[in-house]
Length: 225
Image (tube, rainbow, N blue to C red; front, side):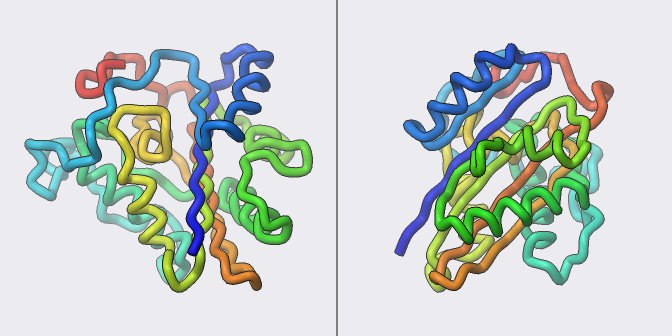
């Protein structure tokens, strides 16, 4: 039984040199965040917000329960709906992040990367000399900010819901998988799932925002960014 996780994030106005320095560190620490503003808060455990009653529609005024724009019979779409459920469950930590919407362009990149990891039998953000932001650029995606979560688990022990649970069972308000999922500035997602002949499951979650209008600059009161 195996399980591996890794996350990555970038904003466009980061100095390119720093980006490449930090990308090297992912192989040492398993996840990395490269952002233009602020760092994470303290490492509180992943418990639901104290004032969360299980339905944040009234608190945030956001309907997280609609289909994000994908085929809900696909497991990648099921995982996207889980992301919105997580945003609904943790309204303070997500700071009422918008309900995420499906991006076919990001999904195509994510699926290709999951399949590539499967073929190479290697969990990594960077394969064949390209990181997720290179892959987005190659596909003509002009993002403002973007991030990626990847995971691998042994089938029969882990499915997509288990992997999402592992992502979310991380400290609050930090640069990790949970932070990407609840990031209030990520408005789009594409997810790729690959089932490998070696018995492993590879998942890629690619997040992005495509407009500066989606980027919030008000302080994050809960995470103290």
